[in-house]
Image (cartoon, rainbow, N blue to C red):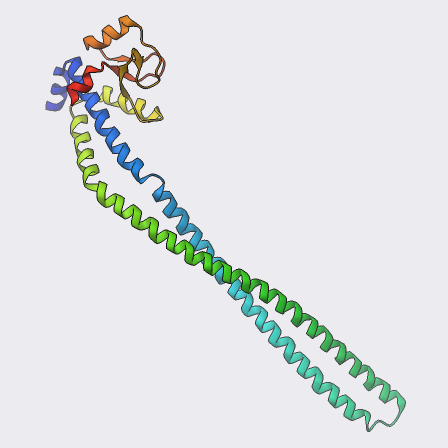
Length: 252
């Protein structure tokens, strides 16, 4: 209740001064967060890319294992066909008629075709294996590069946070203190204007007869009203709260 009474007793000039002070501190916080820039997003993007590369490498390694197993299987089939060919050739030495000999010859021919097919499959699997291994090697190199980039970005972000965190915390506390002196309706308006402004400026000074936010000209009579500090005046073009340039000196 005491805070409400304090807000009610504030003159318009004091309210404008509090709003301008609030804007200055909020702008400093914005600068600190801008200093960090896109680093948090860049760190997240790198972490996502690294995770994707690791998944790709893992998948390709699984496919390479399958291909190696397939090559081993085809080599075993070639050996089995070779054994069968020798068996059939031996049996041909003891046939009783031409029909049996021809039948064994067909079996031998079939096994030779099986060997040729297996050898073809082995060549195909080997070519695919080579291609996948190249992808793995390039992905592993890229992964190492991205891990190095991530470590550098994290260090940069940590350094910036370390340098600015104390200042930011102090400013956030100061913002809370100033906000407690401003009535809720005015504070809500300030936050709404600030959230809609591209540069986060809700309170601006009149500079060279123009709004310091949108740079549209302010009529002389309106400038006099602003300097009188008798009421809260907003720019008719951008909706920002206007204060005279001497407010900046007063804030200093």
